[in-house]
Amino acid sequence: MIQVLEPATAEVMAQVPKAGIEETDAAVARAKEAFPAWRGVSPGDRSALLHRLANALEEKVDELARLEARNAGKPISDARGEMGMVVETFRYYAGAPERNTGRTIPVAGGVDMTFREPLGVVGLITPWNFPLTIAGWKLGPALAAGNTVVLKPAELTPLTALEFERIALAAGIPEGVVNVVAGPGSVCGQRLVEHPDVAKIAFTGSTEVGRRIAAGAAETIKRVTLELGGKSANIVYADADLERAATAAPSAVFGNAGQDCCARSRILVERSAIDRFMEVLEEAVEAIRVGDPLDESTEMGPLISEGQRETVSSFVPDDAPVAIRGEAPDGPGFWFPPTVLCPVDNDDRAAREEIFGPVAAVIPFRDEEEAIRLANDTIYGLSGSVWTRDGAKAIRTARAMETGVVSINSNTSVRVSTPFGGFKQSGYGRELGPDALDHYSEVKNVYYATES
Ligand code: NDP
Image 1 (tube, rainbow, N blue to C red):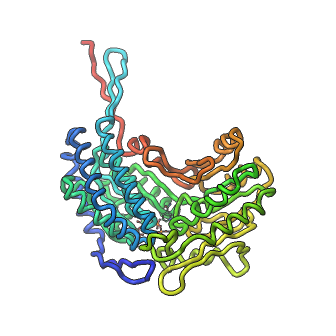
Image 2: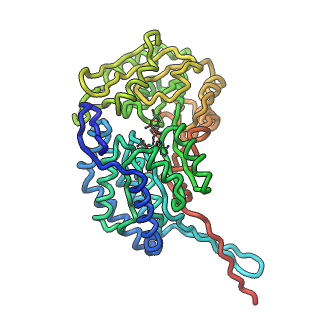
Image 3: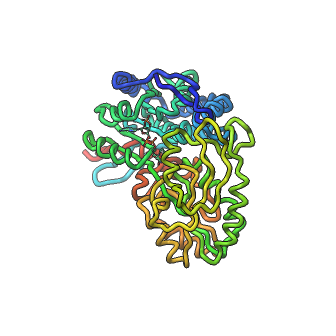
């Protein structure tokens, strides 16, 4: 059995049968059997089924949000927003089957036409930080493109995925099209990677496991998309609206208790503005309400596990330059206070490694050239921000940043209708928007001879 913990209390909230190799193989076999019929469903009917699924999820938003808030330790208001995004993701991709068209290309002696064919059985391996949201980013385009799926959620947070499987079936998605296996990554996840009947793996998680998945998938030439770690830069120029930039900075690092691959955990501030920036930042950090995830006014919950708390603590040793430290509850639960380190050198460990906790590093810079050099001096490239009132400088900086997603005068990274994904060791492939669909299908080229 998997003992599922509630991070705010450190108590067991549910027990779930633990899947192993046998259950994973059975799930792949069910998905393989269901594939021909699912791919044969007409685009209009597939679209209607995905709309029904979106409606069924919408009816359960509050229930799912509560489950996710308790199991992942995230504030209920955030969890509700995330479940809303899951609904929106299915609505968006419900429109895709009928738009998934090919091209006709005139050639000598005939005509070529292209079709987008589904891949078959797709393995989805997802993390514990945004459990159902990230699963939805993969499920939506995978199902819309005509694939069947085996979803392996993180062992720490399997509950909403298991609930999703029930909702999908009740909404009329045929049996075998969506299969969830809750079990350890090193067993069930690895089996999906090795399984000859799995055509593709879509993974979100650590760069270390992503590397292992890419290597394992090479054996059967599986398609792979990887959304991995980040160490994103939030560049604040002195000519920015400093109040806005500093007030917005905490939620960009401390949202989801910092357990966010998009966390702008390196805050790069132009030297001449650093005093004013830190003043406003301090007020904003001290105002963050850390506490019970089920309290509507809570803005930050606990970390996911004791192990994660130990890892995060290791980035704040006794001699760390702690400039700001917020509040966190005592007692049971995996709490850690929002913490800002300043000044940090870009070569320090806190600036180089993904902390995945509420610890921000403030790094001063001299000019535009140095800001860009520091921002890019990392193995990662997932997201980032630029704050300035100079439009040309904003665009220059955004274009120069080696990262998949950049926001100007904002810290948002993810929208259902726009592509999201990384450069460098943050992974490859894109989720969301029209681009994701391409990663769940192959182009087939059919030649029709018109001359005898
Ligand atoms: P992992 O990368 O280990 O886990 C992500 C998913 O991969 C989980 O479902 C996990 O299963 C599964 N998995 C683990 N090992 C294998 C394997 N050998 N083959 C196939 N699947 C596998 O992340 P962690 O949970 O261990 O977190 C560690 C660190 O990773 C964090 O501190 C953070 O830095 C980073 N991370 C980044 C995320 C992102 O969004 N980019 C998300 C999560 C973590 P299971 O957990 O059930 O064993």
